[in-house]
Image (cartoon, rainbow, N blue to C red; front, side, top):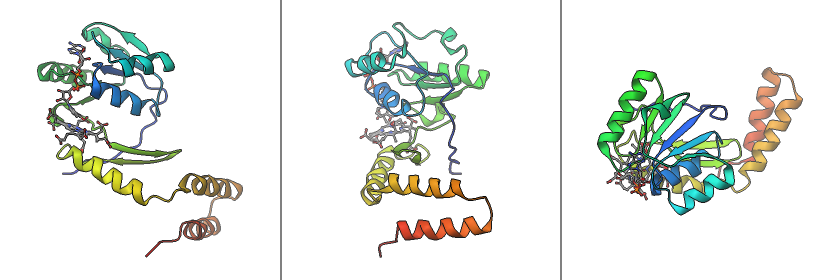
Length: 187
Ligand SMILES: C[C@@]1(CC(=O)O)c2cc3[nH]c(cc4nc(cc5[nH]c(cc(n2)[C@H]1CCC(=O)O)[C@@](C)(CC(=O)O)[C@@H]5CCC(=O)O)C(CC(=O)O)=C4CCC(=O)O)c(CCC(=O)O)c3CC(=O)O
Ligand SMILES: NC(=O)C1=CN([C@@H]2O[C@H](COP(=O)(O)OP(=O)(O)OC[C@H]3O[C@@H](n4cnc5c(N)ncnc54)[C@H](O)[C@@H]3O)[C@@H](O)[C@H]2O)C=CC1
């Protein structure tokens, strides 16, 4: 069965990223849009990640992973080049009911990291359930290519108009029509 997408408020959640390499750097960069409460644990940290840690005042534990690193964590990303360690951390997370994403095997994920498009509060998340990550990336590029350039302005305008009026059928009709007018479908 395919995976159901959920849009979660991460702003107050504590995220642990295990690993400091290329993939960890990409995950941290993407996560920073959603939360600054990120801790990184790894013996070696890539230069770009070091810069992100400094800029965003993230916590850094410069050593190998310890089970105690999971204390008070809500979400864990395991971005190491060691499948056994991914399995071990995933098992620990399952016991503690922590959300865990492992970069080397969908088997050790209880959530998948999607390919992302973020335009203010408009977020597009894409996944193939772990079957073809490069396809997720390609679909992102397709969607990016056909998203209207002014989509942020349209979102802002619609949200403002929506706030001005009380809930109900009259507003529903007005907002739906305005949306179609602001973003006419090209055929
Ligand atoms: C299960 C998952 C785990 C997770 O959640 O991380 C996972 C797993 C694995 N990826 C692998 C390889 C690649 N991953 C990418 C790219 C991305 N991978 C991402 C997510 C995910 N990757 C999750 C499933 C997503 C889904 O459901 O579709 C994206 C979307 C998000 C992100 O990571 O930021 C990001 C695109 C971001 C963007 O640009 O939009 C590329 C292409 C590239 O890098 O150019 C390649 C090379 C091509 C290939 O091999 O397919 C390998 C084999 C490693 C090896 O061979 O050693 C594994 C392990 C395995 O499959 O067993
Ligand atoms: N999910 C995805 O999108 C993709 C996943 N991968 C997989 O991701 C894995 C990581 O790739 P890269 O970041 O390029 O590797 P890398 O070699 O650049 O980084 C590995 C990192 O893991 C850290 N590490 C190793 N043992 C550790 C431990 N015990 N505790 C804490 N940190 C530890 C190292 O210090 C290093 O920072 C690879 O196995 C690769 O196959 C590769 C491409 C895409």
